[in-house]
Image (cartoon, rainbow, N blue to C red; front, side, top):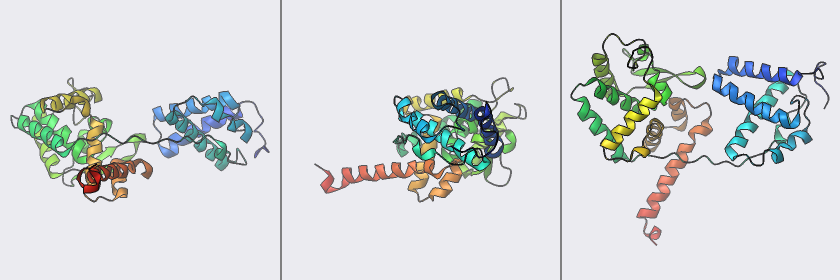
Length: 304
């Protein structure tokens, strides 16, 4: 290819370009450390096959299909996504005169439909959590608050356990949540959740550090692992198979039940903190699958 700038043939230009790309992803798009490390690994894997990515021609990049033939579709899709973004950056910066992304492998991936809890299972968990919280025991009130925010606001586990005390609304029924890549969004807090939070703040007391749900020593926050354990314990006590329950499954239930209730997909994207609407669209498939099952079960022609 014809270099777009005079120094592309210098040794290490590709490495410098990758470094600049990662700096851009961190500064302009707020990519987290783990995300940047994954991009670096994926670009390094491509470089091992084709050499300097800035100078690699289309024939060399086309060879990645064979070199990565044994990868899982999801892994191949992730690597190709990293390369497409890198080549877009190179084109914008004048490091390449073309975008060779069309020759990259095109894995066919299908996102698995998220597992769901039924409405009766959700109700059983809430009934037990509310019954236990009526004693005003600290741990029981905390668990009810956690459950209300997972199902009522659709928070990710990490977002929930790391909520600062300052995020609790005073007047407006909204939480300020810091999601992936440090991106902030506002999420609604239901009346039920606000009541649970008010009870939790009363039993939590003035101490406990800066986090809404502090750890036992009050030096940090409740861990994701402990949140997982608490939910599974509650599920088992409510007569639900523990393996069916996790923070993420409650987040799925929040999204699916909102969509069933008529929520707009773009609003749902905002509430969930998805950067790409395609991620949110998985819930339309969940709803479609539910409707197909309903027809097969209830329609006369569906009974074979």
